[in-house]
Length: 240
Ligand code: ATP
Image (cartoon, rainbow, N blue to C red; front, side):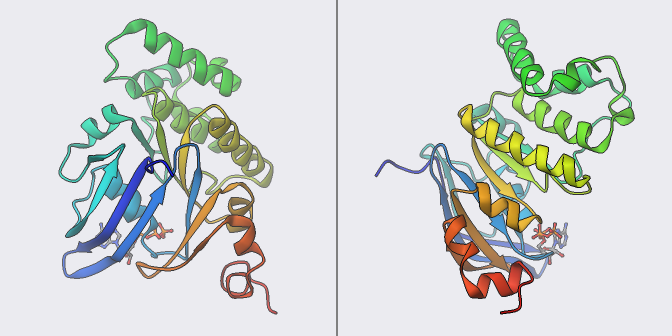
């Protein structure tokens, strides 16, 4: 078996005295969609922030393509090939769509590669192409989420971290979002997906880790978890 693209080992994260993550280990193989699910406050966002270098863990290791990431600056981690689409999108609402996208490529010095990335984003999200001069804040919720993903793709990542991409979107747009995630994956991107829409997430995930108050409680293939009675009861609201 080839080495995983990302390997997280024995992670412990604290906010002050409060422990958010307890001894958590997981791996992401190249080409996978790995999902982190669990109720509010389970620690999913904390794990993504630790991978992207925003949070320093108390203990543990994060290795990406065999290279240790802990204590590296967030911008170095982007250069290595990891882009993070945070919860709440964090767009620059007064800047245009194009300006937001260009900010995603700020580390890319080669103009022809920047142009290529822009083409890739517009082929994925044609609606953004029609709105390049519009302020990001004037877009619909779904379009803003597409822009946040587009901005992350501008850095040409190998691994994309998606935090609640479907949050607050209308059901039809949620469906489109899940299709987009699959398309990104088919175009070669490895993905870690944090989602509240557990049912849809399990349909597209290659592997799923379930967290409860900072601890790993269950793991398995999406389709296996869907038929697991404990999981159905706890996360799909099914009374068996
Ligand atoms: P959600 O779906 O609500 O975003 P989550 O699974 O992503 O939940 P985290 O946001 O990682 O969970 O939070 C894990 C725990 O850490 C929670 O108990 C939360 O209150 C706490 N926490 C998160 N961020 C901070 C912070 N900046 N300061 C203190 N505690 C925090």
